[in-house]
Amino acid sequence: MLLREGHQLVCHDQSFTDHAVRAQFMREHPGTVCVAAQEPEDIYREATGTHPTIDAFVSNDAHPNTRSAIEEIRLDDLRATFEAVLVFPIRLTQLLLPAMKQRRAGTFVFVTSARPRRPEPGFATPTSVRAASTAFAMALAKETAPHGIQVNVAAPNYLYSEMYYPRAQFIDDAEGRQHIARAVPAGRLGTPEEFGELVAFLVSGRSPFTTGQVIDFTGGWP
Image (tube, rainbow, N blue to C red; front, side, top):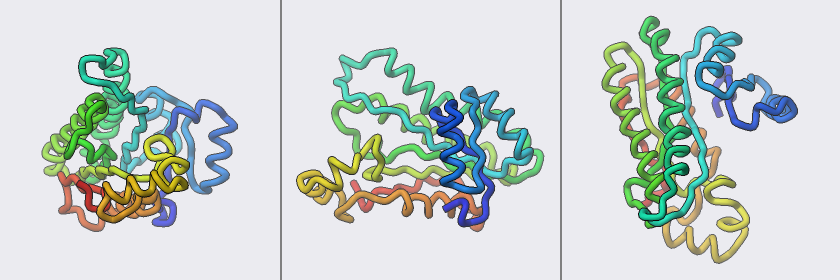
C-alpha cells in the first residue's frame, strides 16, 4: 500500500541478515530497500546511507506470544519481549527524531495491539508490553506536536498473520472460522491489505492535525 502511494521504503526484518532473503523480498516488492543491520544504530546508519531524509517511521515489530500464567512467566521471555517490542522502537525513535524536529516535519506510526482493551488469561507479557508501546507513542505525540510531527498508533487484533492467527487454524478450518465469527462482530479476520490502507493514510500526512490517536483495527471487537 505504501509503494502504491509512491513512498520509497527502507525495510528491516530479522530475516534480512540472509542476503538471499533480502534479494527475494526486493524482487517481490520493487521499490524497496532492505537493510541487513539488526541493531538500531546500525539500521539508522544503513537506512540514512541510502535515504538521507526519512520522513516517516512505521514500527511494526513482531514477537512470539508465549502463553503463561502470571506466576509462571519466565523473566527471560519478559525481558526479550520488552527489548523487542518497546526498547527497540524507542531507540530508533531517538535516532530519527532530531532531524525531524529540525525539519519540523515527520510521521510516526506504531503498530501495537488492541489486546489491552480486554486482556486474555495467559497473555500478560505481550499485553503489558504492547500497552507500554502505546503509552510511549502517546507521550511522543505530546512532545513532538509543537514541532509539526505526527504520531499515531494502529492497534490491531484479529488481523490475519501466520504468527498470530495462522490461515490453517483460523481461515481454512471450519471450527476456527466459527471461533472468529463468534468473537469478532465483523465475522472474520482482518486482512493485511485492509490494515495497509490504514497505515498508508496515517503515513500520508493528509490529516496532520490527527495526532496522539489510538485507532483500533478489530472488526468491532471487543
